[in-house]
Amino acid sequence: MIKMIASDLDGTLLLNKAQALPEEIFFLIRELKELGILFVAASGRQYPNMKKLFAPVVSEIAYISENGALAVDQEEVLYQDSFDRELAGKIINAILAKKDAEFTCSAKDYHYLMPKTEAFRSHMLYEVKNECRFVNSLEEMTDPIMKLAVYEPGGLTDESIRYWHGQFGKDCVVVTSGNAWIDFVPFGTNKAKGILEYQKRYHILPEECMAFGDEYNDIEMLKAVKYGFAMAHSKEGVREAAAYTTDRVETVLKKLIMAKGKIDYDTVVAATSGDALAAGAVLDYFNDFMDGLCTGFYTDADGFWDYGIDLSMKSFMQAKLLRAMLRFQP
Image 1 (cartoon, helix red, strand yellow):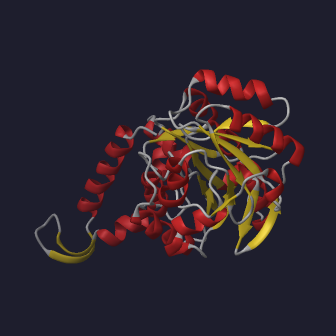
Image 2: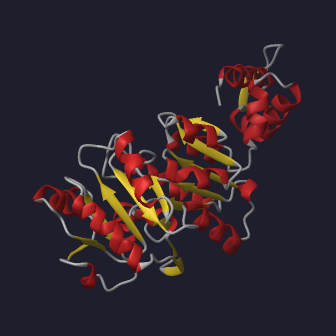
């Protein structure tokens, strides 16, 4: 049975550069909670920003923010990683020296910013809607630094990715986070660290977990669970790291809720390949549900009215389910 689901935001739940979650996801999260399934939002975004996005269910989910540098459950900080300040200073100076590049420096409750342009300032305040503190030097950044990120307003290129990897790849983790951001985090910091923390906290096994992501900063998380889903539009390396792919997170969540979190996805996959035993297991799982749908007044083979399970209707529904399984592409 699935007991925990973790999902990335940008490019996963937030598609097409959206800055607001679809209302549907809040309904699904509540349905998952009723089934005893923990939902974990796992993102490179800051914790206060994530709470705004999930406002309707803010206290009903758990959080992994800043690409795994911070995990918070019910306002309790489970852990908080910190960046070496000397290295942070070197990265900040390199970003300030690079034309057009901007940066954010992550503390727990806000981002430190030294914007070069009003466009970036407005983007962070009014589009991304981050909590921000504007400073003029590293010395003014008094809180522990968890993560640094460089923003390339024209979008990332292979050249810029190679440049930042070449500059700091030996000193920390350098990973893409969306189409315009590269994150710098301490070695050992990633979303899988948060996943392992929640697995330990709630006594959940990897085979009882599902995760969704679309970027290279999601790879460790996708590998930390049995049911790792890469978005269909993900880069090839991300898709290769995942067990499955999907166009939308909500589609998978709806199927899981319909099955009450208990159906084994591997069984469904086997059934779609024509495995008779697996198909029988799926039919058995839905047996009581079908009995309920097919119970009522009906006409039997001799033309008499009766009340009970209409076996003819049930056979018809089972045949439809079998055909649907064979057409399904996991």
